[in-house]
Image (cartoon, rainbow, N blue to C red; front, side, top):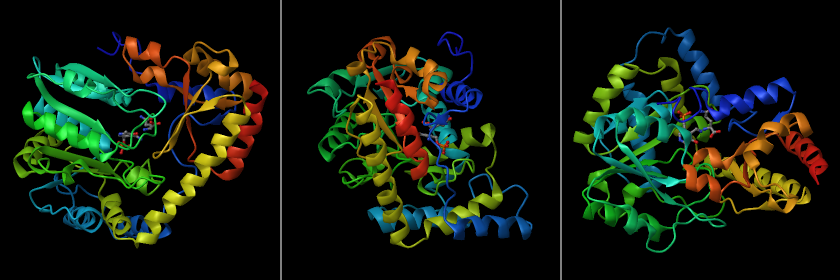
Length: 382
Ligand code: PMP
Ligand code: GLN
């Protein structure tokens, strides 16, 4: 399967990160922050380890974290979920996505995603044996064209896998598009799996969880993760919420993928989820300034910067520089100027890859001085 995709099991993130390390380049490829998350949460993890919370947690997740997830859904979105039957903890959002797709889909089913799509979606849909169908997000605003969603749904669409805010484009989908997805899922009796790991990282638009829309609650599984909100991508603590029968099906798969997720990190993430509103709004504001800083550097280097309203990422069009193949450029960039980025085409099937062949994705979740040096190096491209 992976060989057929041409990547032999090495993800683009690993490939570009290794190239960045080899050439001492600033890694704006893989999306991880270079500063740690809130001190209270880091202290809570240390305290949990010191107090002996080092053996298996319950498979469903520590009660303290399930309750914190439920409280978070209520506090930010007015969503009520039962921490005992409607929440499971996962080993990052990645495992929740895999468990949901393996639980719900198989050969003969279609799973619909946006294109570009986050890399694990394609791999896991392949593992499940389902067929991967897509609907294009069209530059520059990365929205589906009129009528494209209706055309993409069929009666074999078992799952529509939404990602909002969207990696790699930074798009934050408006309510109208989300409601259209819910209505079409209802019409075709599909389950909505929604990956909202960047829920707190939006720059202007307010994040709208799909599960809050009319008609969505009883067919939507919502996935998030501590990695992005709390700048702890290495902790790999995620969660999934939704109606009890669907959550229970996902839990069965999760049990046999990892059984359980890191115990001391779970109670620490519960502390993070309980932080004051200031933490959440502050994190987004800091990131927005970083987006603007890197955006200015990319523009000064001669690229067209496409709008990003959320996530860690901004995409830039390299065609004003005369580049036609940004994938080839991304492989040479670390050696050429000492900066690494990810080509958007790797998040696409063949046709989408042609449409996005001049686009690069840059991660701006880095210290100001790192972004300044990256901008200086990027200027050498012009
Ligand atoms: N979904 C999206 C859209 C992502 O960007 C990422 C990684 N940043 C993940 C899922 C994986 O999250 P985790 O590290 O919690 O598994
Ligand atoms: N989600 C991160 C990104 O998009 C990378 C995660 C990974 O390396 N698989 O950059």
